[in-house]
Amino acid sequence: RLGVAAGASMLVLGSGGNGFSFAKLGRLLGAGRIDMLGNPHWQHLARRAGVDRFVDYRASDAAAELTAAAGSYDLIVDAVGKAGGLE
Image (cartoon, rainbow, N blue to C red; front, side, top):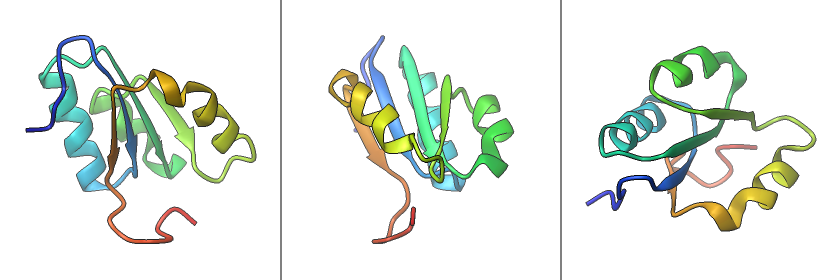
């Protein structure tokens, strides 16, 4: 149901428990690349969950960095769960 095919690229928005679960599941389903946008405090756990690239949501270039890669994602998962959660 997650829709991850082998070799797919995915972006996970949010670095909480749900975000880590989506990243780990994506890796188990064969995702080729997993990026995550979230709180840098959790970056070490994101790496353990299989995240390839972590972007600090507070970084001044975060939006530009993800916008540049946006067309290359097969799947984008919103694991924040509420409006304004990344602000």
